[in-house]
Length: 261
Image (cartoon, rainbow, N blue to C red; front, side):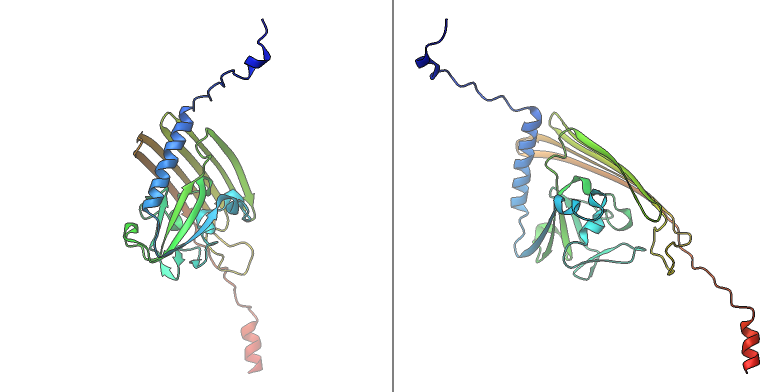
């Protein structure tokens, strides 16, 4: 029997579908991130932000190393490739790294760079009068926020190459299992210009480098007000020391000089 037209308007609207466990976990993490940002809000400090879209617009795109992306900030300079240390406002070292507000130990920068830009949703460089919760870092704090889609059970595999025999395959994958979010990445780099070329030639002598690095991020929501995060990274790099080509003096130079004298 067909429903009369005047009764069709009173049909109950079906309730929206219940959110999935992954959506619930994402919402809980967003609330915890917002609460931490409120606690760590800098007062009297300057903040410069670079988004993931800005990193993708760089010449190397997602293959840009983190230290090269940091050079886009004002007041950041880098030593020669032999040391790789970054300077903020002409200060040596004293740059603190944080991911989602969690402070990383020293040693994640310079040659042993374990972080990739694949997980970066945005990063902000805080300088100036930093409050006490940032510790004794007088140069600056690099606060990295992960991508919103870093944990949606997807990944990518890529190969990037260029001049000087550069080849760098990489992979990344992130997902959500129950209350746990995870992200893993790995990269291999090989080229013939590991350290700056000491000669005017295009190719340096004995300057090959091989670099492997990996990164793991795990985050589990314990309850609506607590979260446990684990991060691990490894970096293994080998560099050759470039040589200068030795030029032998002309055999006739001494003879010509003696005749002129």
